[in-house]
Amino acid sequence: MAGGSFRRSIASQLSKVLDLPPENLIKSISAVPVSKKRCVADFQLSIASVIENSSSDCLAQDLHLQPQQLAERLKCDSVVSEISAGPGTVNFTINRELLAKTVLQQVWKDGLEYGVKSELFSTVPRQKAVIEFSSPNIAKKFHIGHLRSTIVGNFIANLKVALGHEVVRINYLGDWGMQFGLLGVGFQSFGNKEKLKSSPLQHLFEVYVQINKAAEDENTKKLAKDFFRKLEEHDEQTLSMWKQFRDLSIEEYIRIYKRLGVHFDEYSGESFYQEKAQEVLKMLENKGLLQKTVKGTGVVDLSEKKDLSTVSTVMRSDGTSLYITRDLAAAIDRMNKHSWDTMIYVTDKSQSNHFQHLFQILKLMGYDWAERCQHVSFGLVQGMKTRRGEVIFLEDVLNEVRSRMLENMTSTKTTKEMEDPMETAEKVGLAALIIQDFRGLLSSDYQFSWDRALQSRGDTGVFLQYTHARLHSLEQMHGNAELTDVNVACLQEPDAISVLQHLLRYDEVLYRSSQDLQPKHIVSYLLTLSHLAAVAHKTLPVKGSAPDVAQARLCLFHAARSVLANGMKLLGITPVTQM
Image 1 (cartoon, rainbow, N blue to C red):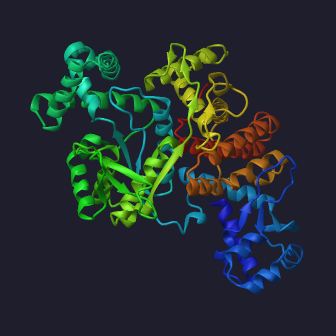
Image 2 (cartoon, rainbow, N blue to C red; image 1 turned 90 degrees about the horizontal axis):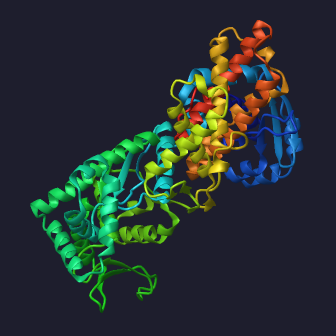
């Protein structure tokens, strides 16, 4: 990584002066964010960070607040052209031509792996992660929470794969429970086999809505109970009907997920864990963790003082399992099957309590790996409606974003020459949804707005796509840049240096996102990159410049586009080449 060789060079000089191993210093040296002030240094050593990472006390006193003395003891060399002290920091400016040459070469050489090969990740062990996300309920609405879970889970999986981890993507469907009793009875009354085949999600939802109106009727209740009992007893006819509901729904989900650019390695579901949940109840009983209440339900005591002040209900009074029991069975099963290093559940924050209880019970059962389970929670989205009203199916959102984007594009003059405007509109529209969703902390709620999401100027997904398409057409127009004969002395303008400095920081941004699994660091990085590239595009023309200047600038724009595309793909966005 470009920043890597510079960090190492700075660290090795510091290590001699401070008498510390260079690897202890690397994490304390970071690239300086580009600012409006211009002419800022490229790297910064944080004194506080060095003290925090070192064990010796005399070093702490010696270093304390003396960046000036430290700066004076360091010398400029072929890499560092200037050293200065700031409040609590020592700042390093890299030789300008070397900066340009190293960054461009590195982006060129590493391609998709630029930023990922950084030594910041060298101490991070390669791991196997199981990620459960999306997880809609069959025959119920695919609400906006499921959409959020889908795009957040996909981002986390993409990031982990890019960093060399092995990932298993699991969709844990709501495919069991009393609602299937109702659905079965409903289908016998209102079902239509043709409709079930042509649009299963919509038809099952309609049937469920219709039968729900009669759900209070005693006869319907009894029939639904009977149907579900037969299902639990594996009655062949009932089971084959349920299986058809499930299989056809999954087929349609796969098609829709494909539009989102999302795939799963495993379609699991609550139905897989009926018997296993009973085994979990036996295990809880054998370990003396299952307690019966007066009402006959089974609970696990989670209170510190063991006074039943916090309990988790794991069994109904009739001995059947609950959602959390099936989750316990699923977690144990996945460990046996995949022997993972970390398991991540991506759901909205209203389920935080559920996961806290889940992890606590696993720990009480003696599974130490419960420590390596993690709930990545997100806030609620208000106000996402289509023109037809409330969002019921994921497909509604995709169609809406495509049609709105298509309208916006039709009003601009370049759209007409496009090969497939529908597909471009969908990719740009999805970028708009994803960026609006990922700009803040995942845990915060936000108010959704179509107009804000689809703006072409400002910090939006549309702007990222527009920048990518523009840089792509620049390369198309002037032929591909060749790195071998670039004269980097031609890239000394402040706007060129700003882009280069920003490209230096990419690995640090990836590192931050990999630590807290928040996409916002990457989003703000890419938005800044797009703004810097847009400015450079204006002030550093390729057309009409001397050949070596034009060639150097093309290389700069190619590097910017390459990193922009890499970052967009991590977020789950497919970059477009024309708009």
